[in-house]
Image 1 (cartoon, rainbow, N blue to C red):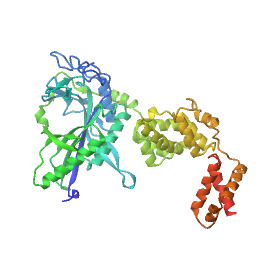
Image 2: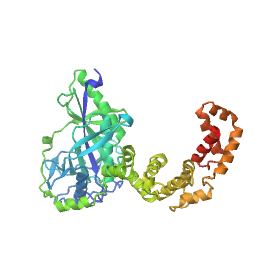
Image 3: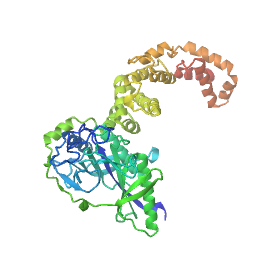
Length: 489
């Protein structure tokens, strides 16, 4: 049977580490990279008699997320004890939320694919709840033993659970990317996947189209979008092959091995009753007043969808351009600042430069827009000089390279300084351009004859020769107009 005989069902559980300075129930630091166990206080290591105190900043970040996805921010939620044994879980239980999470429902719209085949899809969210992270087991540095680092124990997490709405690895990756961009946009998580600040668990099952849901297997701790896609693709094919060979899928937790590209079973999957959830007696119910929620809402930034709509309505951008420019907080902020400096009339050229030359250089240098050597004001100055005819677009690329390399000084007028210092000002003198055209026509009679014989490419070749003779300074529009007039006259 082919893959089309099966329907894939995917839901994601994403753990976003909240960017508070201290842990969710203690005052210990959450900074990454410290020596093992130096950031684990008495609460984190569960010394007898210690009591947890809820971090207000973690709650506000959860509220912010709930508002951003249009969810219900519960006026009352409850913390529970999730009981299980693991060496890096000092208390023997994890403080989490179960029956009454702080964020309930919500949705995220994703864009899947590119070009004509791209489509939008809305993924429903089940919940997002607050919980503490566990510590970390260290296996690499010890022969025949494992070490325990409790620095991470108690780090605040927001676990974001989707409905099983995704039907391919491409949709799962698009959802994870959209979620990653959103938590960074609203500044609740730094999104650093290498450090474990944003990690995904994928619940994957297969079924006959329209049939009952199949048995799911959970792929744990995927810390890159590429691994997420590879792991799901392998798991889907493995489940299909197993069923078609007469086997049966057992509910399990599995790990993905990037080296082999395969998933392997870690343990049989627990259900909720296995964890023996019950309300934590040391923590009162979390009550979020309407006033608290309203204050957090008043401090929210403009969200990506709202900004995208504004770019289309007020700046006249296409849906594609607006979507691209709002894909990350840094790019959106850079573009907005560029338009603010250049003026709304140049909104489209600003979009072209930010998505084109700037994006290419940032990607090559592995920088985000906030670290660009070319400031929004400097780029706006360059775009303005192209717009008023001082320089051509091609010369603008030379000026951009100079700006990127730090030439022209650090001021907003750096582009003007480069243009004057290098003598790059465009020639608009019709007489001077005509003289150059006459020289080029005299030296390229073959191209002239080819053009008059109906070969349009010959015209482009002559334009290139004129621009070369003018050292790129001739106004391209004038060159085209004057050259065509002479050739047709």
